[in-house]
Amino acid sequence: QVHLVESGGGLVQAGGSLRLSCAASGSMSSINAMGWYRQFPGKQRELVAVISSGGSTNYADSVKGRFTISADNAKNTVYLEMNSLKPEDTAVYYCYLQRLFRGFTYEYWGQGTQVTVSS
Image (cartoon, rainbow, N blue to C red; front, top):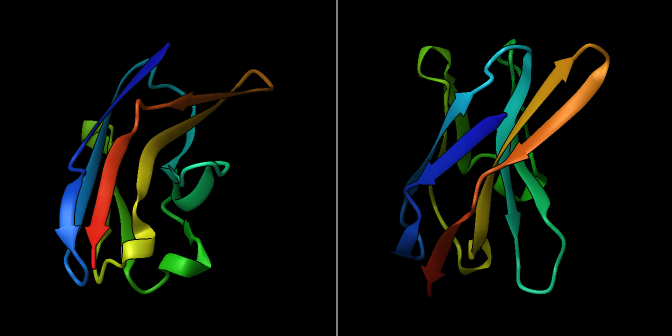
């Protein structure tokens, strides 16, 4: 089992910055990727950014150039640096971890952290 604990959400003015952190614990073997998703009210969860175990990254078009994902493998922690925040970035942000083990894919989610950007 894997446990994900997020921190760093909050309220910020438009144009400001926030840094989200997600610390993973538990079964840390065979991690394929970690990342961040977000969910707007009444909408499905959508990808924000993901980083693979090899360090490659992928971003949603809406955050490219503003958000940066990074990972500290020694600490099993993934970060999301969010700059130039916009009111439309307001959402609940969820940490995500994927493991590939014996032909199966295992996905884990954090509890979510609210990010609110005021105009």
